[in-house]
Length: 209
Ligand code: HEM
Ligand code: HEM
View 1 (cartoon, rainbow, N blue to C red):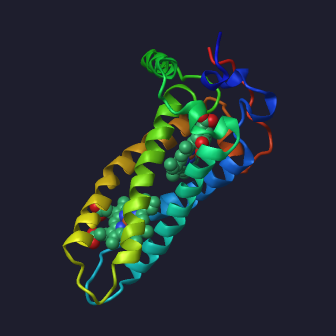
View 2: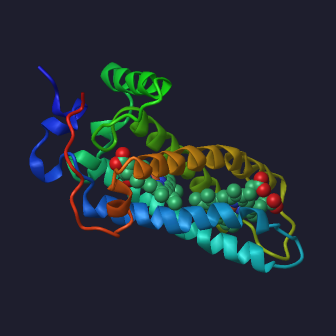
């Protein structure tokens, strides 16, 4: 028998096959603050003697992005079943099997067509949350630790290095995630409009193949 956690289309209609409003609001916050924090990262030269405008801007955008990531993690633990990590993180053989099938589909130059969070998209979304959570955790430590005018000691310097590690990973994630959203949009999938609150139409429920 198929377990609903492995097959969202088998879950009750209220929370299945669609992305709930709380998840979409948090996603919008990730789009706005997450992308702004990523873009402003390079402006954030931390100077011992003064608080540069770039540093202040990046710190506050980063804290807003960290709040969005933190709340999405809380929602993933206690939110609606379809949004919970237990329903979709790629931690079962079946979910990896879906992801591999999607890879095969892409290699045949076709787009995978699955309900939200499933297959390759779910793997990539998990990866995105992990790398943003890493930036958020290390950035939040810096937020409370770095003091303009005071030389960063050995430990804050180390956290700064750890914080910078995620830049390439975030860039790779965004390129693939946004690239996939654009490819699906060009193929007529309107899901991106609903994710960005540009349309009220519920996501069509698709069988999970
Ligand atoms: C999810 C939230 C965040 C994201 C996505 C993010 C992203 C980035 C990126 C992409 C860079 C550029 C790294 C590089 O040049 O190699 C950066 C640098 C930096 N970030 Fe963040 N950041 C976040 C939160 C924060 C917060 C809350 C602070 C608080 C102070 C912070 C402080 C810094 C500093 C000081 C640097 C520059 C280090 C240096 O080159 O001197 N970040 N961040
Ligand atoms: C311009 C930026 C972005 C666009 C256009 C975009 C687009 C989308 C779309 C269309 C979906 C629905 C996919 C589906 O139904 O399978 C989605 C889901 C998702 N996106 Fe993004 N996204 C963006 C930025 C981000 C960022 C910065 C993150 C940070 C981690 C992120 C994480 C996720 C996650 C985790 C999901 C699954 C829904 C959820 O549980 O929140 N996205 N995105």
